[in-house]
Each structure stands twice: as C-alpha cells, then as structure tokens.
Length: 490
Ligand SMILES: Nc1ncnc2c1ncn2[C@@H]1O[C@H](COP(=O)(O)OP(=O)(O)O)[C@@H](O)[C@H]1O
Ligand SMILES: [Mg+2]
Image 1 (spheres, rainbow, N blue to C red):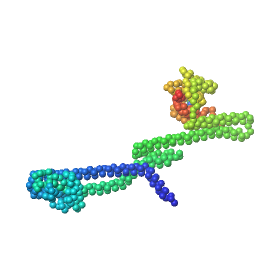
Image 2: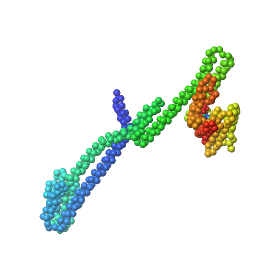
Image 3: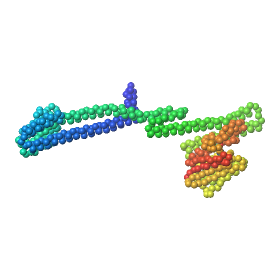
Image 4: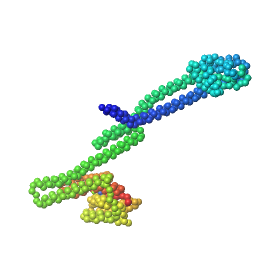
C-alpha cells in the first residue's frame, strides 16, 4: 500500500542524483545569485546618483538665493517675483522656497507650498541639521527632499534668517519604483528560464556519456563489433570514447585469439586420439599376429606420449599466464645451465650430424632465475634448432651480460624462417609448415615425427615474460636462425 509514495520518493531521489539535475541546479543558483547581485548593485548606484543630483540641485538653489539676497538686500518684491517665476516655469522637478526672519516668522513663501507640505513638520524635521537634506512625505503622499539653512547675509531684507527649500522628487521615486518592478519581474522570469535552458544544455552535454553507456550495454562476447561514433563529441568525451573503442578492439582480439586457440587445441587433441582409435579398430577387425598387436600398441604409446606432452604444454602455458604464478628464483650459473642443455641434446644432435657448441663466456655469469623454467626455455630453442638444421650444420649456445641484463643466444645454421612467418612464430600453435605436418600427423603411421605442436616458442616467451624479460628472433631463410633471450640480471 505504501509502495506508491516510496516509489515516487525514490524516483525523485534518482532524479536528484543525476548529473543533469546537479549541473542545472548549480547553474541556476549561481546564475540567479549573480543576477541578483548585479541588479541590486546597479539599483543602489542609481539611487545614490539620483540623490546626489537632487542634493546638487538644492545646493545650487541655496547658492543662488544667497547671492540674490546679498546683491539686492532691499528688493523683497523683486526676489519673490524671481522665485515664483522660476518655480512656476518648472513642470517636473517642482520646488518650493520659504524665507523666515530671525523669529521664525515667514517673510516669503512660494505659492502652493503650504498646500503641499506640513511646514511645522518640515521645521521640526530639519531643526538642528543645517544644510542637511531630509526625506519627507507631502500632504498628498508625494516624496520630497527638504533642507533648512541660514541665509548667512546680515543685511538681508527684513532680517531674513532662514531659508527653507523643498523639492518634489516624485519623478525619481517613480523611476526607482519602476526599476524595482522590472527587477523582480526579470528575476522571476530568469528563475523559471534558467533551470529550463540549463537542463537542456546539461542533457545535451552528457548525451555522449549515455551513448557510451548504451554501446557498452550492447557489447557481449558475441557482439564485439560495436564502436562508439564520437563525431561532434567534446574532446574529453571523444578521448573517453576512443579509449573505450581501443579497449573493445583489444577485447575483440583476445576473444578471437581464445576461440582460435580453442579450435587449435581441439584439433591437436583429436588427431592423436583418432589415430589410436583408427589403429585399434583396424587391428580388431580380424585376428592378428603378436607382432601386429605389438606394432599397434607401440603406435598407441607414441600417440599417448604426444597427447600427454601437448596437455603438459597447455597446462604449463595456462599456469605461466596466471597472475598468481610465482617464480622460484635461485642463483643460477648461466654457463653451467647452457652446458647442461648441451649435454642433454648432444646425442640427438650427433645423430642428426649437427654439432652442438656451448661457447664459454669470458667470466661466469650468475643470475637469480627459475632454473627448471630456464632449462625448459633453452631446451625448446635447441630442439627447434636441431629440428631445422640439416646434417653438417652447427648450433651455438652463448651467454653475455651487460648493463644489468643478461642475454642468451641460440643460433643455428639451419633452414631459417620465411620473413612473412617471422612475426607469428611466437603465437600459440603457429608452425611454419603447419599444413604439411598436420597432414602427416593425420596419417595412421604416427606423424608426430615432424615435431611439436607449435607451443614451444609460446612457452619460451611466457617464461621470459615471467622473468621480466623478452624473447626475440632473427632469421635468414637458407642461412640460419638466432633466438635471443633477454632478462634483467637481478
Ligand atoms: N631454429 C629454427 N629454425 C627454423 N625454423 C624455426 C626455428 N625455430 C622455430 N622455427 C619455426 O617456428 C615454428 C614454431 O616453433 P615452436 O613454437 O617451437 O613450434 P614447434 O617446434 O612445435 O613447431 C616452427 O614450426 C618452425 O617452423
Ligand atoms: Mg618447438
């Protein structure tokens, strides 16, 4: 029952948590605040300026009156005429003047002044503040600025002592009132307009993010072709989109590699098993001699060894690539390690008519390495070299150290690798003569003689990666191949 208010309050919370809402709220608040400050500042300046011009006007009037009193001290009628003329000629900024003698008795009063102003109030308001301007409301509610000052002229007619001036500032007040009206109207309109426009701008600004999110949602392992089209994106988001696209390209590559790898594994596992099965079926088709059964068993054993080697290699690669794999480093004398590999392969090499040399390094090189792994890496290289070097050729193992790095070189004078195949030899299951060897492996005669599975160099590379080093290969078809292992000397 209470689900409706809950839902609506959580929806409101969701809206409040959106970037567009937050940006809009921030824009609008700051915008309104700035507008308020700017208009209020302008209003204050306007008010001060208007007051100042009124005050200047009054000061000017006072000065003119004092001059008249001084220059024509006896001519009260002339003075009245002059004042009335100027006062009557004004249409907007009406002003009134009253002259008093030293007893406070009015000597001269501009017509209309008594009707417009409560003169007793004027006296009480200005008393004690000579030449100071005071605001006052007239009898009809109009605004006035009034002041009272001494005549400061001793020989004035009838001893005029005080001058009172009142100026009608209704025009200025009206101007300020209209200003306030427009001020609030504009502020109200902006308070409505700011959030509307701000929200549109914010939505427009973050649309790329939504598009990136939508693309990310569409991406699955089966759909890695999706890319973000970043045309027209602001540069920050364009670089985000670009990074995202690059990530998808890498993922696509990895997925492709994995599925190719899986297909290769399936193929390489199926071939020996098919061989075993085929031979068993053929053998069981009729009665066989003991020799024939022995042949079948030998061939099955060979295929089983091949299978178990392949599985061993795959397990090794899987383990080597796990981030949890640790090396068991120990001090290894590299020269001694190369001699051990040479001894192990000596018989095989001489069977093939190939000489296997482990070159002595000038001084002994010792490094912290995982010995079994390094043995495996160098052995893979030597077995490749033996497999591809014809009779009369030679294979050299050498090591050197410099700049906190050690190098192990395995070079042969064998068949070499075609230039176009060179970049791929470290790929899993890649074999230069793949089609030929696979075809031969598929025959019932146990084609494993033509060699490995294409995992040898991939294993070498992952061992080097584990050691923080790298493997590189250089080859000239018909002249020979040299593989260089480089690793830091810890
Ligand atoms: N010393 C070498 N001389 C010529 N070709 C080589 C040499 N080492 C490797 N190759 C080529 O690189 C391919 C990949 O080697 P590798 O990963 O050890 O697989 P495999 O030995 O099982 O075929 C080999 O099939 C071979 O064609
Ligand atoms: Mg090999």
